[in-house]
Length: 234
Image 1: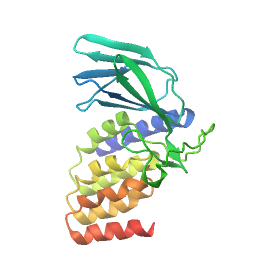
Image 2: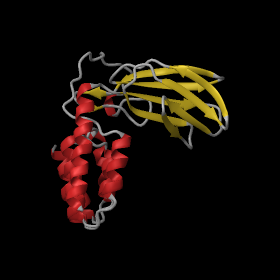
Image 3: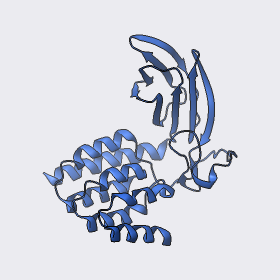
């Protein structure tokens, strides 16, 4: 059974590798100012939100159709333009779609953006870096869809050694975000194994500047200190 699972994971991420080596993804983020319950489609992908902020990752269509639906009413249906390796941040207010920002996703081979509309850390200066006409990434960011497919299989694993092997499989083919790594590592039964895997996973994570936020998943203060000291040395 385990051989079948790992074979399936290998095939999944081989497909992911091929696709992401041949196309450059963009992101589309939308905030809806007026209160209410909305569903938002970007082409065929549906995203819901409880706080009026909608996030679409790994967008490859250069001119996707954005649809905002409230109840049974289509509030707006409009084609938008995106640029590879950029995040387009939109606002919908007074029945109008407004472009707030266009941000480069990567800086120095690292994922450079925060949770919504700015750069992380000291890079948030208001200066937009030049657009890269050619991809400069060595890693491939794991999409939400691929992560959920992986997580479904991951949850079936009962032991830490099996979980570690599965994380090793995914990290050899794609990069996780710190938030995704957090979900995986919290499920470990033993803190020492969690620490070991967390250190190894840091080498390939897409946003290492955010990795320190995982420090509170450790049960023992000594392991938390060990984790933070490890990050200080990197």
